[in-house]
Image 1 (cartoon, each protein chain N blue to C red):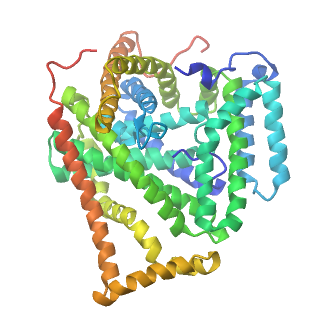
Image 2 (image 1 turned 60 degrees about the horizontal axis):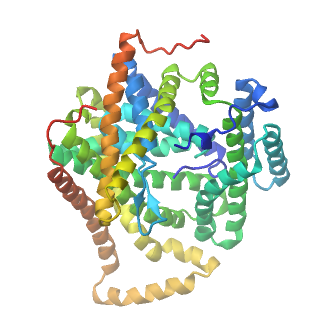
Image 3 (image 1 turned 135 degrees about the horizontal axis):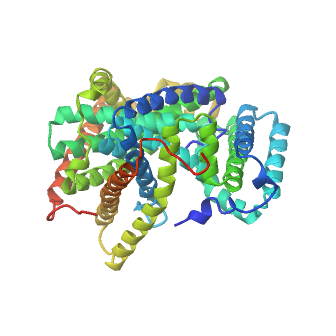
Amino acid sequence: MHVPDGVIGPDVCAAAGAISLGAVGYSLHKLSGSLADRAVPMTGMMAALVFAGQMVNFPLVGPPVSGHLMGGVLASVVLGPWAGCVAVTLVLLVQCLLFADGGLLALGVNTLNMAVAGALGGYMVYSLLRRLFGEGPRSVVGAAVAAAWISVMAAATLFCGEFWLTYRGGGYDFGRIFTLMVSFHSAIGVGEALITGVVVGFVLAQRPDLVYRSQIRDGIVRGLGRAVLAGVVMSLAVAAFLAPFASSYADGLEAVGTETGFEEKARDTKAAFADYDAIVPGWEKVSVSLSGIIGVAAVFAIALVLGRVTVGRMQPAGPPHAE
Amino acid sequence: MPSSYLDRYARSRSLCHRLPARLKLLLSLAVVLTAALVPARLWPVHGVLAVVVFIGHTLARIPLVYLARRLAFFLPLVLVLSLSVPLAQGFQTGWEIMWGILFRSSVAFLAVVWLVNVLPFDQLLRALARLKVPAVLVAMMAFMYRYSFVLWDELDKMRTARRARSFGRGGRWFAWTTSAQIIGMLLIRSLSRAERIYGAMKSRGWDGRVRTLED
């Protein structure tokens, strides 16, 4: 997930850096109001928590393969969008400077992908979904789950865009790298969404006061969110589930196929689906959009179910922990 | 807690350790910039850069074994990332781009490893502050650095407690929820801790500005 130096071109890095500098600067400005002195320990601690939380392994297929939390949506659900964005930026800064995890020059790219799109954008999705689902613990968990998944997808999509911008001269095929990255990350995103959901559910059950309550102040986020995000969310989710299909049917592949010897395969797939085309005219398009809709519905169903399961199971056992 | 793993040689003594902090920060930034800016077909520049980085590590007396170990954790990640190029683009031009990415990112990575190992983190923060990085951000980074170690230790304790209760016998869903609950518990504890610390700082006159003995 962390882009090292030398992968993304310096011009793209500079542009991404300028955008993230603006966004993080604005977040810092938002934080430095009346609560400036409180923001330092709270945000610093949250960043340390995300840092430490990444050490917890989640077993995947086998013992050696495991995933971990990325934490952008978690941070902004707990601390609010501005502090969340700054917290993730801090994590990236320290990871870059101490671990050399993620490049120094690519810091702007990483910040854009994970702090600006991950935490700020994730919070926009989260607050929008909370409005849709209504108030209540289930809607908080459900919205956090969906936002976490979408934030990972957004980061992957942004990375593809940056990659494409870097190698745009060399006849680079955006469709293929997009397919590869997005189908890979839709699985990673499910992990991130599950972890975020369980953590948020746990915190809600134990200390509901810790979860950030949006005030009138973040009207900007909501206004922007309502206008832009419905479209972005839908198109991203659809794109994610469509990518595997789109790549094997789209015309783009045929053009590249003649150069790389893909045309044999492509013709086979075409032939296989020609039958369906004969039976139901326009079947291809219907099936593609159907699977897109099913995909989006599935994510939201998972979100709602997880919200129900985690909140139902974790009733507060007595008074909340003091320490 | 892998504290010694990160910046193990930061406090040792050598020519490189005596250089001024800002110079070292700017030097490694320059190496990273050159590695990223110069196109891959000008390979002699990258060769020279690799030699410069190697000399830097030798002068700082950082053992090769340590560098090899750091690279062993770094390279697989970049390899996966760069392998996607030949996979996605076809193998003729793809390989070239892939080797370019691998070499340049390794050089940049080693330059940052050098920086971390010749410059203790507190001095790095001070250098950043003098390079006009916002004071709030530097204060937060200092806070984060200080408390990551505390949280790591706390996490370790919770993991030990979990192991002591035969973790690993349940199903995968159980493993996942327990791990996520550990993060949730850590979150609750650390935010309460941050509130206590904030109270303590406030009562000692904290106004949002970090003051050190050197100021």
